[in-house]
Length: 209
Image 1 (spheres, one colour):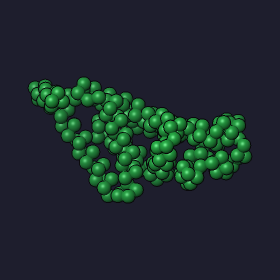
Image 2 (cartoon, helix red, strand yellow):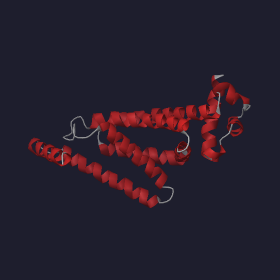
Image 3 (spheres, rainbow, N blue to C red):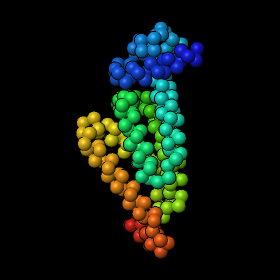
Image 4 (cartoon, rainbow, N blue to C red):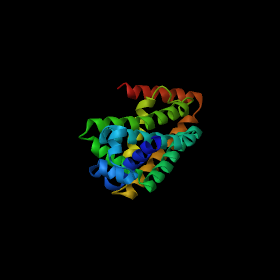
């Protein structure tokens, strides 16, 4: 039974990847899974429930796959390098298409949007843990909302993944610019104690305006 559920989850993701969200049905998922379509309803109740479960399971597997790399990250530049690697592998595997289709389907479907948000939250939480570690000794600590920054980074990479489909060169340029910003943060981290205090004071004054 567990094997059938796994086949249906994999079949749902494959259907989204190859046929798009509009091509998802019990029949198409069952065909991709190589099982009888009645098993969709037996194991999951509805196609929507299967899609939600598949979306979350897919994200859990991807986060788990990249967690060892995230655990090694010690700087923002290294975090972006992992992001680039993830982006390249996601594109090659067709997972960018899956994400784009899930987001498109979520616009007019709250139940699908809830599942997609839960899947994205796994990435946001993983990135937030890295940021908390990376910024622990930085003069920027306490000046930046790490959860908000994790969401911004996640949103940026989602946008870049979708944007690359129409302007690959522009997406590469955007990634290169993010690398430059990460390098600037490393320069700030290397400041002496007096310069660090001046930096923090200046940032607070600007933020309070």
